[in-house]
Image 1 (tube, rainbow, N blue to C red):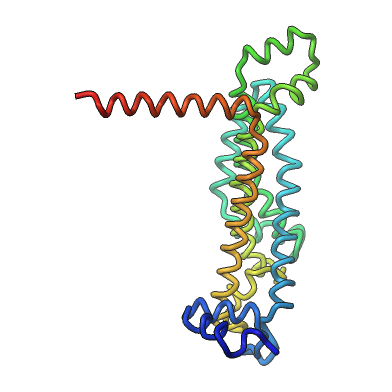
Image 2: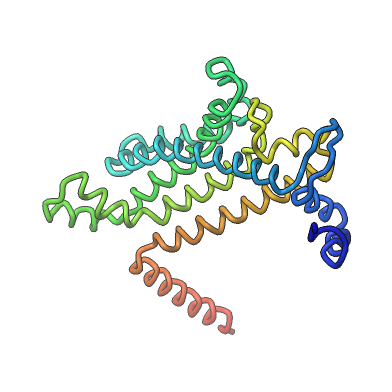
Length: 261
């Protein structure tokens, strides 16, 4: 027996109006406007997995490009203006435009949209990695050099751990952007994402569009929470204590200012 047919569950979904129709689409199969079967848990799982797989692939490519470049430029202190400028230009280029540009080389499909999403993800990662490396106190870096650390050892053991919270913040922004923007994948001929019901409402209906949009929002929120937790875990305890002390000092100062006649 379908738990979503009749009873309290069905009444609760119906009470949600258009959002209830979207939830019903995600869990129950029905006949689409084109005559085929659409919706249901199986198709939802396939679209969700395709969406996540595409997003992960784009993030892997973006990290493989942006992290090494950001670490090197941040360590040497050279090329910072170029890195930030390229990152800002990358933010200004629409992903849909990149898809049509890549069409000439890669045609339609997974690789095309994956590269477009990777280029969308690179700017925040590159910028945050560079800035995070440059914000490490020079006295700490000089102390590492004085201990005879090589450049590689200095990066991996001193600069990177201290820059990691800001790097994770860049990854967090990029991951959420990629998850949200992956809905354009059907425009590049890769329909196995949650963007298919959103773009092709003529096949899936309005309830399919609403249901897929709700699920994309849920995945984006889950991604935000996951990377936020990873960012907190990556923050060294010393930095947490230092920031906590600074916040307490600011609180005390603000209270004194507010109570001063």
